[in-house]
Amino acid sequence: MVNLEDPRVLRTRQLIRGAFRDLLLRKGFDAITIKDIAQKATINRASFYAPFENKFALLDDITEQAFHERFPEQVANAQQFTDEICNQLILMTHQYIVVFYRICRMDSKTMATLVDEKIKQMLQQTIENIFLKGDTPQRVDKHHIKIMSAMTGSSIYGAAHHWLNVEANDRAGVLVEIVRPYIMNGLGLYRNGDVFLNDSQEK
Image (cartoon, rainbow, N blue to C red; front, side):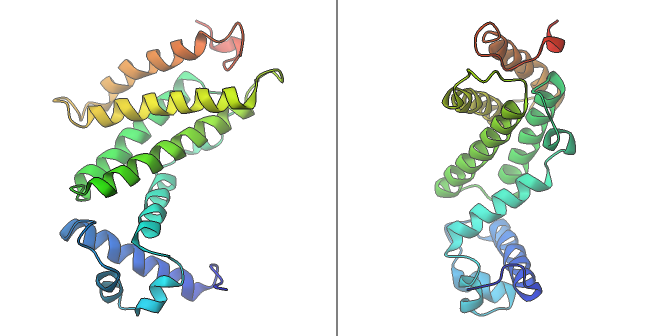
């Protein structure tokens, strides 16, 4: 079994990731082969398959790594889903999508689908973790929290993704001002039943 903490393994993973990013810029996801990645990373094919099953697993890894690199400390330590935390998530998601869709070649529908689903999954999990750390009453069903997290994450991601293609897509502050009230007002509808926000957030 491969020791993923071995410095040699870590170095190989970094070489593979770097090679993959460079190839994405030049060839696009569909055209990239394991041979291409191995040659670019100056490793043999066996060294690639030690940490990664295939290029789809590598894409998943790259997507997750980039997400965590952009993760604000304020969000990581959040105990409540406040206006400011919502702002941070919207901005982070927008910036993340810009990186993938502008810097990487996203001409592959397969890659776009995989990246979109991965981002939504990570965003949903982040929001769910914040909800669970908050003052959510014990009577609230955990499945309900998952649904609310999925709805909130999908709303943030959908708006950020759409913003990429509109005329004023670089004005992230405007995006925040549009999306945050929608998200927070929607969550506020549940405060008389399944509470997700605390009293200090009432206007």
